[in-house]
Image 1 (tube, helix red, strand yellow):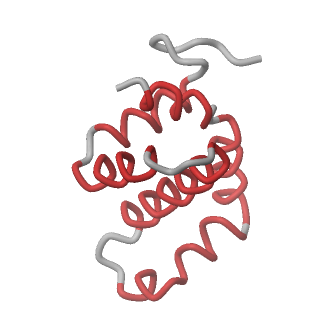
Image 2 (cartoon, rainbow, N blue to C red):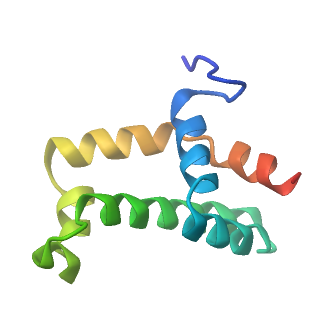
Length: 103
């Protein structure tokens, strides 16, 4: 069962929204995503943006990862993948969309 965190449905949702709002690049993309017509398009775009943010933070200066190997490692294999995916599955994307549509 999810426990509320800082007024959000759970910690994962709060954390993703916080990162989206506190990074100039992701904030610009968030504004663009909020302009999409359908909620499903917004959710898919948000998920992709967050995966890209994770890749960027982990692969910062590693040439091998920058060639696309990181996505395969992070989201397709092993315990790191399972933990990341589990956390992302808990994110209430609809709540992030709702909160940012109201602004």
